[in-house]
Image (cartoon, rainbow, N blue to C red; front, side, top):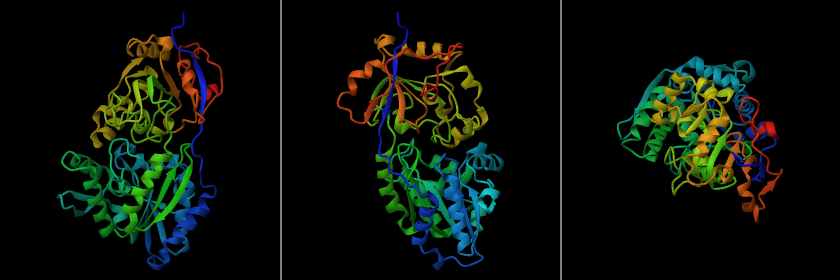
Length: 423
Protein backbone atom coordinates (compact mmCIF):
# COMPACT_ATOMS: atom_id res chain seq x y z
CA UNK A 1 0.00 0.00 0.00
CA UNK A 2 1.33 3.44 -0.94
CA UNK A 3 1.90 5.76 2.02
CA UNK A 4 2.65 8.79 -0.13
CA UNK A 5 1.43 10.07 -3.50
CA UNK A 6 3.51 9.35 -6.58
CA UNK A 7 5.13 12.42 -8.13
CA UNK A 8 6.03 13.50 -11.66
CA UNK A 9 8.11 16.38 -13.02
CA UNK A 10 6.30 19.28 -14.61
CA UNK A 11 7.72 22.21 -16.58
CA UNK A 12 5.95 25.56 -16.69
CA UNK A 13 6.34 28.09 -19.48
CA UNK A 14 6.32 31.75 -18.45
CA UNK A 15 6.88 35.04 -20.26
CA UNK A 16 10.64 34.93 -20.88
CA UNK A 17 11.43 38.49 -21.96
CA UNK A 18 14.81 39.57 -20.57
CA UNK A 19 17.56 42.14 -20.88
CA UNK A 20 20.57 40.60 -22.64
CA UNK A 21 23.05 43.50 -22.34
CA UNK A 22 22.80 44.42 -18.66
CA UNK A 23 25.58 47.02 -18.45
CA UNK A 24 24.67 48.54 -21.79
CA UNK A 25 21.01 48.91 -20.82
CA UNK A 26 21.92 50.53 -17.48
CA UNK A 27 24.12 53.02 -19.34
CA UNK A 28 21.43 53.81 -21.92
CA UNK A 29 18.79 54.31 -19.25
CA UNK A 30 20.97 56.57 -17.12
CA UNK A 31 21.83 58.65 -20.18
CA UNK A 32 18.11 59.38 -20.53
CA UNK A 33 18.10 61.16 -17.15
CA UNK A 34 20.71 63.68 -18.34
CA UNK A 35 22.38 63.57 -14.94
CA UNK A 36 25.25 65.65 -16.27
CA UNK A 37 22.92 68.65 -16.06
CA UNK A 38 22.61 68.39 -12.26
CA UNK A 39 25.76 66.62 -11.08
CA UNK A 40 29.07 68.45 -11.15
CA UNK A 41 32.55 66.97 -11.21
CA UNK A 42 33.82 66.15 -7.73
CA UNK A 43 30.40 65.85 -6.15
CA UNK A 44 29.58 62.75 -4.09
CA UNK A 45 26.76 60.35 -4.97
CA UNK A 46 25.39 57.75 -2.55
CA UNK A 47 24.13 54.68 -4.43
CA UNK A 48 21.81 52.26 -2.64
CA UNK A 49 22.40 48.51 -2.49
CA UNK A 50 19.69 46.33 -0.96
CA UNK A 51 19.58 42.90 0.64
CA UNK A 52 17.41 41.11 -1.94
CA UNK A 53 18.81 38.48 -4.27
CA UNK A 54 18.32 40.51 -7.43
CA UNK A 55 19.63 38.96 -10.64
CA UNK A 56 22.85 40.63 -11.90
CA UNK A 57 22.76 43.10 -9.01
CA UNK A 58 26.55 43.29 -8.84
CA UNK A 59 26.78 44.04 -12.55
CA UNK A 60 23.93 46.57 -12.38
CA UNK A 61 25.47 48.37 -9.40
CA UNK A 62 28.91 48.51 -11.03
CA UNK A 63 27.36 50.00 -14.18
CA UNK A 64 25.68 52.70 -12.08
CA UNK A 65 28.98 53.45 -10.33
CA UNK A 66 30.78 53.68 -13.66
CA UNK A 67 28.19 56.07 -15.05
CA UNK A 68 28.68 58.52 -12.21
CA UNK A 69 32.43 58.19 -12.49
CA UNK A 70 32.05 59.10 -16.14
CA UNK A 71 30.41 62.35 -15.04
CA UNK A 72 33.43 63.12 -12.86
CA UNK A 73 31.45 62.45 -9.67
CA UNK A 74 32.63 60.49 -6.64
CA UNK A 75 30.14 57.66 -6.09
CA UNK A 76 30.00 55.43 -3.02
CA UNK A 77 27.66 52.60 -2.01
CA UNK A 78 25.46 52.49 1.08
CA UNK A 79 23.68 49.33 2.28
CA UNK A 80 19.95 50.09 2.15
CA UNK A 81 18.26 47.17 3.85
CA UNK A 82 16.51 48.27 7.03
CA UNK A 83 17.22 45.79 9.82
CA UNK A 84 18.59 42.97 7.69
CA UNK A 85 22.02 41.51 8.34
CA UNK A 86 21.22 41.28 12.04
CA UNK A 87 20.71 45.02 12.20
CA UNK A 88 24.48 45.68 12.14
CA UNK A 89 26.75 47.45 9.67
CA UNK A 90 29.04 44.41 9.60
CA UNK A 91 26.16 42.05 8.86
CA UNK A 92 24.88 44.25 6.05
CA UNK A 93 28.36 44.52 4.54
CA UNK A 94 28.63 40.73 4.56
CA UNK A 95 25.29 40.40 2.79
CA UNK A 96 26.49 42.68 0.01
CA UNK A 97 29.72 40.69 -0.30
CA UNK A 98 27.65 37.60 -1.13
CA UNK A 99 26.10 39.54 -4.01
CA UNK A 100 29.52 40.53 -5.29
CA UNK A 101 29.18 44.10 -4.08
CA UNK A 102 32.53 44.97 -2.51
CA UNK A 103 34.74 48.09 -2.80
CA UNK A 104 37.19 46.14 -4.96
CA UNK A 105 34.58 44.85 -7.41
CA UNK A 106 32.58 48.08 -7.55
CA UNK A 107 35.58 50.39 -7.80
CA UNK A 108 34.34 52.73 -5.08
CA UNK A 109 33.88 53.00 -1.31
CA UNK A 110 31.22 51.12 0.60
CA UNK A 111 30.09 53.15 3.62
CA UNK A 112 28.06 51.08 6.05
CA UNK A 113 26.46 52.36 9.22
CA UNK A 114 23.22 51.86 11.12
CA UNK A 115 23.25 55.50 12.20
CA UNK A 116 20.48 57.74 10.84
CA UNK A 117 19.55 61.40 10.95
CA UNK A 118 15.98 62.69 11.14
CA UNK A 119 15.54 64.89 8.08
CA UNK A 120 11.84 65.74 8.44
CA UNK A 121 8.49 64.80 9.91
CA UNK A 122 5.55 63.71 7.81
CA UNK A 123 2.11 65.38 8.07
CA UNK A 124 1.21 62.50 10.40
CA UNK A 125 4.09 63.46 12.70
CA UNK A 126 6.26 60.46 11.77
CA UNK A 127 10.01 61.16 11.96
CA UNK A 128 11.78 60.54 8.64
CA UNK A 129 14.99 58.60 9.29
CA UNK A 130 17.75 58.63 6.66
CA UNK A 131 21.12 56.90 6.44
CA UNK A 132 23.77 59.24 7.86
CA UNK A 133 26.33 58.60 5.12
CA UNK A 134 23.73 59.17 2.41
CA UNK A 135 22.55 62.34 4.13
CA UNK A 136 26.04 63.82 3.76
CA UNK A 137 26.26 63.10 0.03
CA UNK A 138 25.68 65.77 -2.57
CA UNK A 139 23.30 63.43 -4.36
CA UNK A 140 21.53 60.12 -3.70
CA UNK A 141 20.64 57.54 -6.35
CA UNK A 142 18.10 54.79 -5.65
CA UNK A 143 18.48 51.32 -7.16
CA UNK A 144 15.76 48.78 -6.45
CA UNK A 145 13.61 45.95 -7.79
CA UNK A 146 9.90 46.58 -8.22
CA UNK A 147 7.70 43.66 -7.20
CA UNK A 148 4.62 42.84 -5.12
CA UNK A 149 5.18 43.16 -1.38
CA UNK A 150 4.65 40.03 0.68
CA UNK A 151 2.53 41.72 3.33
CA UNK A 152 1.23 45.07 2.13
CA UNK A 153 -1.21 45.87 -0.65
CA UNK A 154 -1.33 49.10 -2.58
CA UNK A 155 -0.62 50.91 -5.84
CA UNK A 156 3.03 50.93 -4.72
CA UNK A 157 4.44 47.99 -2.79
CA UNK A 158 8.12 46.99 -2.97
CA UNK A 159 10.48 49.08 -5.08
CA UNK A 160 12.09 52.52 -5.21
CA UNK A 161 9.77 53.93 -2.55
CA UNK A 162 10.48 51.11 -0.14
CA UNK A 163 14.23 51.60 -0.63
CA UNK A 164 13.84 55.24 0.42
CA UNK A 165 11.76 54.32 3.46
CA UNK A 166 12.87 50.98 4.86
CA UNK A 167 16.22 50.66 3.11
CA UNK A 168 17.70 54.06 3.83
CA UNK A 169 15.67 54.40 7.04
CA UNK A 170 17.81 51.58 8.46
CA UNK A 171 16.69 49.77 11.61
CA UNK A 172 15.24 52.84 13.34
CA UNK A 173 13.27 53.96 10.32
CA UNK A 174 12.01 50.48 9.58
CA UNK A 175 10.75 50.15 13.15
CA UNK A 176 8.83 53.42 13.23
CA UNK A 177 7.30 53.00 9.76
CA UNK A 178 6.10 49.48 10.48
CA UNK A 179 4.63 50.66 13.78
CA UNK A 180 2.87 53.51 12.01
CA UNK A 181 1.03 51.02 9.81
CA UNK A 182 -1.10 50.19 12.85
CA UNK A 183 -2.55 53.72 12.62
CA UNK A 184 -2.21 54.71 8.97
CA UNK A 185 -2.45 52.92 5.64
CA UNK A 186 0.67 51.66 3.90
CA UNK A 187 0.11 54.09 1.02
CA UNK A 188 -0.28 57.07 3.39
CA UNK A 189 3.05 56.30 5.02
CA UNK A 190 4.98 55.37 1.90
CA UNK A 191 3.92 58.45 -0.07
CA UNK A 192 4.46 60.86 2.83
CA UNK A 193 7.92 59.59 3.74
CA UNK A 194 9.02 59.31 0.11
CA UNK A 195 7.92 62.88 -0.57
CA UNK A 196 10.05 64.09 2.34
CA UNK A 197 13.08 62.09 1.21
CA UNK A 198 12.83 63.34 -2.37
CA UNK A 199 12.35 66.94 -1.25
CA UNK A 200 15.08 67.03 1.39
CA UNK A 201 17.71 64.40 0.53
CA UNK A 202 18.83 65.45 -2.94
CA UNK A 203 17.60 62.32 -4.75
CA UNK A 204 18.96 62.53 -8.30
CA UNK A 205 16.94 59.66 -9.71
CA UNK A 206 16.29 55.96 -9.55
CA UNK A 207 16.90 52.76 -11.45
CA UNK A 208 13.95 50.37 -11.36
CA UNK A 209 14.44 46.67 -12.04
CA UNK A 210 11.66 44.24 -12.90
CA UNK A 211 12.34 40.51 -13.19
CA UNK A 212 10.57 37.80 -15.14
CA UNK A 213 9.28 34.51 -13.75
CA UNK A 214 12.66 32.85 -14.36
CA UNK A 215 14.47 35.14 -11.89
CA UNK A 216 16.03 37.03 -14.80
CA UNK A 217 16.21 40.76 -15.50
CA UNK A 218 13.24 41.61 -17.71
CA UNK A 219 13.34 45.39 -17.55
CA UNK A 220 15.71 48.13 -16.38
CA UNK A 221 14.39 51.67 -16.37
CA UNK A 222 15.81 54.97 -15.14
CA UNK A 223 13.18 57.14 -13.48
CA UNK A 224 13.41 60.83 -12.50
CA UNK A 225 12.29 61.59 -8.92
CA UNK A 226 9.21 63.52 -10.05
CA UNK A 227 7.94 60.33 -11.74
CA UNK A 228 8.77 57.81 -8.99
CA UNK A 229 5.17 57.44 -7.81
CA UNK A 230 3.50 57.43 -11.22
CA UNK A 231 5.98 55.06 -12.85
CA UNK A 232 6.30 52.66 -9.94
CA UNK A 233 2.53 52.12 -10.01
CA UNK A 234 2.81 51.09 -13.67
CA UNK A 235 5.87 48.90 -13.13
CA UNK A 236 4.18 47.09 -10.24
CA UNK A 237 1.42 45.98 -12.61
CA UNK A 238 4.07 44.51 -14.91
CA UNK A 239 5.84 42.82 -12.00
CA UNK A 240 2.59 41.18 -10.88
CA UNK A 241 1.92 40.01 -14.43
CA UNK A 242 5.42 38.48 -14.71
CA UNK A 243 5.47 36.91 -11.23
CA UNK A 244 6.21 33.15 -11.15
CA UNK A 245 3.29 31.03 -9.99
CA UNK A 246 2.48 27.54 -8.81
CA UNK A 247 1.03 25.40 -11.61
CA UNK A 248 -2.22 24.79 -9.74
CA UNK A 249 -4.29 26.97 -7.44
CA UNK A 250 -5.15 24.31 -4.83
CA UNK A 251 -2.78 22.01 -2.95
CA UNK A 252 -3.09 19.83 0.13
CA UNK A 253 0.65 20.10 0.80
CA UNK A 254 3.28 22.42 -0.61
CA UNK A 255 6.86 21.24 -0.05
CA UNK A 256 9.51 23.97 -0.31
CA UNK A 257 13.15 22.87 -0.53
CA UNK A 258 14.51 26.20 0.75
CA UNK A 259 13.51 29.65 1.96
CA UNK A 260 15.67 32.70 2.58
CA UNK A 261 15.93 36.47 2.53
CA UNK A 262 17.62 36.28 -0.88
CA UNK A 263 14.45 34.59 -2.16
CA UNK A 264 11.86 36.92 -0.64
CA UNK A 265 11.38 39.41 2.17
CA UNK A 266 9.40 36.76 3.99
CA UNK A 267 11.72 33.93 3.00
CA UNK A 268 8.93 32.44 0.90
CA UNK A 269 6.91 34.78 -1.31
CA UNK A 270 3.38 34.98 0.02
CA UNK A 271 2.20 36.18 -3.39
CA UNK A 272 3.21 32.73 -4.66
CA UNK A 273 2.14 30.42 -1.82
CA UNK A 274 -1.09 32.23 -1.01
CA UNK A 275 -0.49 33.33 2.59
CA UNK A 276 -0.40 37.12 2.09
CA UNK A 277 -3.51 37.90 4.11
CA UNK A 278 -3.42 35.06 6.64
CA UNK A 279 -0.26 33.28 7.78
CA UNK A 280 -1.85 29.84 7.78
CA UNK A 281 -4.66 29.83 5.26
CA UNK A 282 -5.36 30.95 1.72
CA UNK A 283 -8.11 33.56 1.52
CA UNK A 284 -10.51 34.67 -1.20
CA UNK A 285 -7.98 37.37 -2.12
CA UNK A 286 -5.06 34.95 -2.52
CA UNK A 287 -4.42 33.35 -5.92
CA UNK A 288 -3.48 30.01 -4.33
CA UNK A 289 -4.71 27.89 -1.42
CA UNK A 290 -2.28 25.47 0.24
CA UNK A 291 -3.66 23.60 3.24
CA UNK A 292 -0.20 22.79 4.62
CA UNK A 293 3.35 23.98 3.92
CA UNK A 294 6.52 22.02 4.72
CA UNK A 295 9.85 23.90 4.60
CA UNK A 296 12.87 21.62 4.16
CA UNK A 297 15.79 24.06 4.44
CA UNK A 298 17.33 27.54 4.45
CA UNK A 299 19.45 29.07 1.71
CA UNK A 300 23.12 29.61 2.45
CA UNK A 301 22.76 33.29 1.55
CA UNK A 302 20.18 33.94 4.28
CA UNK A 303 22.81 33.37 7.04
CA UNK A 304 20.33 31.74 9.39
CA UNK A 305 17.66 34.39 8.94
CA UNK A 306 14.57 32.19 8.81
CA UNK A 307 12.00 34.95 8.51
CA UNK A 308 8.87 33.32 7.11
CA UNK A 309 9.46 29.91 8.66
CA UNK A 310 6.41 30.59 10.85
CA UNK A 311 4.20 30.75 7.78
CA UNK A 312 4.71 27.00 7.37
CA UNK A 313 3.22 24.34 9.61
CA UNK A 314 5.99 21.75 9.26
CA UNK A 315 9.77 21.63 9.00
CA UNK A 316 12.62 19.23 9.79
CA UNK A 317 15.05 19.33 12.69
CA UNK A 318 18.06 20.24 10.57
CA UNK A 319 16.27 23.37 9.39
CA UNK A 320 15.23 24.29 12.92
CA UNK A 321 18.84 23.85 14.06
CA UNK A 322 20.12 26.13 11.28
CA UNK A 323 18.00 29.09 12.39
CA UNK A 324 19.76 32.12 13.87
CA UNK A 325 17.07 33.00 16.38
CA UNK A 326 18.44 36.46 17.15
CA UNK A 327 18.73 37.65 13.55
CA UNK A 328 15.34 36.18 12.69
CA UNK A 329 13.69 37.82 15.70
CA UNK A 330 15.18 41.25 14.91
CA UNK A 331 13.90 41.10 11.35
CA UNK A 332 10.41 39.90 12.28
CA UNK A 333 9.91 42.25 15.22
CA UNK A 334 11.08 45.20 13.11
CA UNK A 335 8.56 44.24 10.44
CA UNK A 336 5.78 43.84 13.04
CA UNK A 337 5.43 40.24 11.89
CA UNK A 338 6.42 38.17 14.95
CA UNK A 339 4.51 35.10 13.78
CA UNK A 340 6.91 34.83 10.82
CA UNK A 341 9.63 33.79 13.28
CA UNK A 342 7.62 31.06 15.03
CA UNK A 343 9.15 27.59 14.71
CA UNK A 344 6.76 25.05 13.17
CA UNK A 345 6.57 21.41 14.19
CA UNK A 346 9.98 19.90 13.43
CA UNK A 347 10.56 16.21 12.68
CA UNK A 348 13.85 14.37 12.45
CA UNK A 349 13.23 13.28 8.86
CA UNK A 350 11.34 14.57 5.86
CA UNK A 351 9.49 11.28 5.66
CA UNK A 352 8.01 11.87 9.13
CA UNK A 353 7.16 15.49 8.38
CA UNK A 354 5.37 14.67 5.14
CA UNK A 355 3.50 11.75 6.69
CA UNK A 356 2.21 13.89 9.55
CA UNK A 357 1.38 16.81 7.28
CA UNK A 358 -0.69 14.63 4.96
CA UNK A 359 -2.70 13.31 7.89
CA UNK A 360 -3.81 16.87 8.70
CA UNK A 361 -5.26 17.57 5.25
CA UNK A 362 -8.79 16.28 5.84
CA UNK A 363 -10.47 13.19 4.44
CA UNK A 364 -8.20 12.78 1.43
CA UNK A 365 -6.06 9.64 1.66
CA UNK A 366 -2.30 10.42 1.49
CA UNK A 367 -1.70 8.59 -1.83
CA UNK A 368 -4.37 10.77 -3.45
CA UNK A 369 -3.31 14.08 -1.93
CA UNK A 370 -2.55 17.11 -4.06
CA UNK A 371 1.15 17.70 -3.40
CA UNK A 372 3.51 20.19 -5.06
CA UNK A 373 7.26 20.29 -4.41
CA UNK A 374 9.27 23.36 -5.43
CA UNK A 375 12.88 24.48 -5.05
CA UNK A 376 11.84 27.92 -3.72
CA UNK A 377 9.32 30.60 -4.60
CA UNK A 378 11.65 32.27 -7.12
CA UNK A 379 12.35 29.21 -9.25
CA UNK A 380 9.12 27.61 -10.40
CA UNK A 381 9.81 26.56 -13.98
CA UNK A 382 10.42 22.91 -12.99
CA UNK A 383 8.38 21.46 -10.15
CA UNK A 384 7.22 18.07 -8.90
CA UNK A 385 3.50 17.39 -8.52
CA UNK A 386 1.47 14.37 -7.45
CA UNK A 387 -0.28 12.19 -10.02
CA UNK A 388 -3.74 13.37 -8.98
CA UNK A 389 -2.98 16.48 -11.07
CA UNK A 390 -2.59 14.46 -14.30
CA UNK A 391 -6.12 15.18 -15.48
CA UNK A 392 -5.61 18.90 -14.87
CA UNK A 393 -2.93 19.05 -17.60
CA UNK A 394 -5.56 18.84 -20.32
CA UNK A 395 -5.84 22.12 -22.18
CA UNK A 396 -2.88 23.69 -20.41
CA UNK A 397 -0.41 24.73 -23.13
CA UNK A 398 1.82 26.30 -20.46
CA UNK A 399 2.50 22.92 -18.79
CA UNK A 400 4.67 20.05 -20.04
CA UNK A 401 4.95 16.69 -18.28
CA UNK A 402 8.59 15.58 -18.23
CA UNK A 403 8.36 12.22 -16.45
CA UNK A 404 6.07 9.41 -15.41
CA UNK A 405 4.70 9.30 -11.86
CA UNK A 406 7.16 7.70 -9.44
CA UNK A 407 7.30 7.14 -5.71
CA UNK A 408 8.66 9.99 -3.64
CA UNK A 409 12.47 9.89 -3.64
CA UNK A 410 13.69 9.56 -0.06
CA UNK A 411 17.35 8.89 0.70
CA UNK A 412 18.69 6.33 3.17
CA UNK A 413 18.17 8.81 6.02
CA UNK A 414 14.50 9.35 5.23
CA UNK A 415 15.04 12.79 3.69
CA UNK A 416 13.45 13.87 0.43
CA UNK A 417 15.55 14.54 -2.65
CA UNK A 418 15.46 18.18 -3.75
CA UNK A 419 13.74 19.24 -6.97
CA UNK A 420 17.10 20.16 -8.50
CA UNK A 421 18.65 16.82 -7.53
CA UNK A 422 16.01 14.93 -9.46
CA UNK A 423 16.37 16.89 -12.70
